[in-house]
Length: 332
Image (cartoon, rainbow, N blue to C red; front, side, top):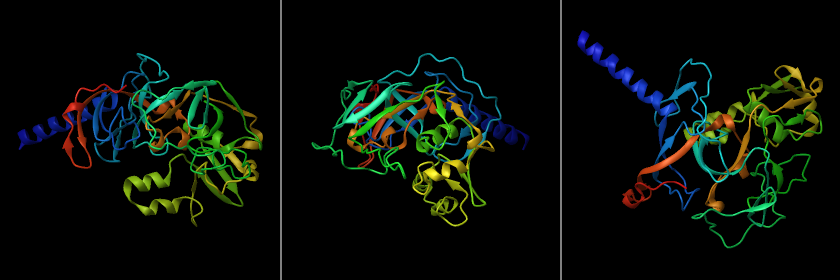
């Protein structure tokens, strides 16, 4: 019996070591969508480097193929990076609206860059950002400027309807960088500022008529997509008894800004906020079929995980046919 217990303990330790390495050094990813075609295909299985941009001590160890995590109780620490994120890099990061998902996109904009899209042509600092080799559009036509897509980041402005945007037309926006100053007053762009406050660990609340809602960047729609649990919506407004609200919620209005509290302090008593980390603008190579920064905004540096290094296997997820020719492909 003692030998069996010892073997079980050894196996558990081995599993924990493997999971720890998975969270710190390398990780295997299965690409579930076509958003990076034709460079990275749906069904490609990638080896990802976790140390390219600076390995982080994991605060949680995620069990494979689940949303279950084990806290590590390790101190927060980031090792020196081998390189910085550069424009054109293919990057693996935590999906900003549900960090259980790992996304693979191309970095289009660096901290401080200006981004705009006109007739689906992307401009970075006023210069055309060419579609990468292997990138594609599925349609010969693009959305017109008078089309407003409320699913687009900053596309639903509530009382500030001047932002007209869709996936092919996007007014100029500046990617936030460390040290930027945002004024916190009734004129602020709450859909831009509140997510940044949350990403950087601040607690943002709306206290209105004796009701308190806590802002979160986690989307109930995306959690439902992953879990199939419709009950997740009951915690978000406009559901009765809800306690959470998203920064992009259409119920939030300009006149509510004065009722915001940041870390327990009224926003009316705070002059400004200094950004604590850099942010990035990510887009898929398959521009007509990619949910990317156009839809959910900036990726904070804290969400950057690493780079895909090589395709170790690939399978057609529709027919489950192996794609042997993809083995050894380097994502570019």
